[in-house]
Image 1 (cartoon, one colour):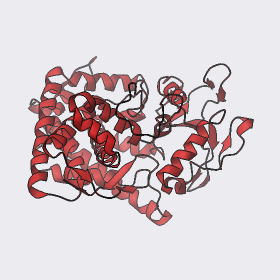
Image 2 (cartoon, one colour):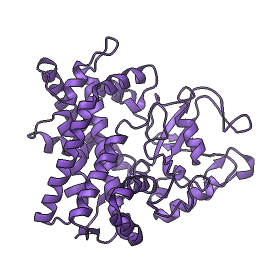
Image 3 (cartoon, one colour):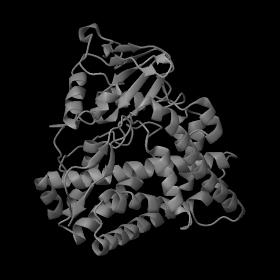
Image 4 (cartoon, one colour):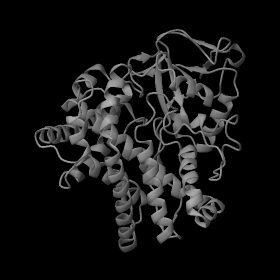
Length: 421
């Protein structure tokens, strides 16, 4: 059970550190988070590790608390690791640090290099490519009539767009996608101890192969640059720095796993939400130009593809101001974005799917601050382009049955979603 930091909320009926919680039905988990938001302060949950009891974390479930943690990076550190479990030191030394696990000044330096590479010309070309890829995918859907929306459409769009933008040749793409799936298939997923000891080796081997592929491409582009993102990243010179081969591999892994996984899941959840809410679907189809942007943001809010990230306190800090909860240096907090996106003090009727919300300050891209998702604009463009293509050419498209979800405490993952039109 969780033990609240506020004496008025000494015990809660849920345990967010228990893997079984994430296998409960979605409505039960939503009710549990609503109960946590009603408490006077964040609740502390103790964790167990393979070696025994761990230290645990304070659960940040309110919109204001998550925003404060995301936008105060000098207090809430990412460097020790934002995922559960935190990456081992030897893994970080071998594969390089992902940008999500870095603090300033190193994070700011790498982000400047990456941002410099995203030139207006590259972004404009990516927007054209997104529309073309979306059109080709809908062509294939019309002719082949596949049954699973995830594998045939939702995963393909972001993967092909990222590969095109990075300049990945066609030949190794299937192999790279297999490595992405192997590297991420068990992130945040509860599994028996026997498998827990074996599976990470597969994931690390997949990550090593994937990074090896892109590192070799980086070396080639450094010798012979072309008009793609890899070339821009390995030749960019910001304050005398450019991405090393290991940094390029870590960034590519982040871009693929984060960009493909999150957009894939959002697209799949979106089709199901529009099927399950026919009045919202009718509103969208009645005026795509007016409602498409709001639809995308509401899907991201309602589905929240990334469930949580954690931070480590650099110093003692009172969350919420001088009278707020005291958090101690070295303690962990977990930012629950899905709960923040259902905060009753921010969103009217938060459990409803409503594409016409006038204001939608969701935290689906991380809550702001220096770790705000670099791919937010790209993800929105991909979702808008695909939905426009689908609902213009196949207005009867809809999901069939419930999506098959993978229980995870990290991302709101869809394994498959049957569909028809």
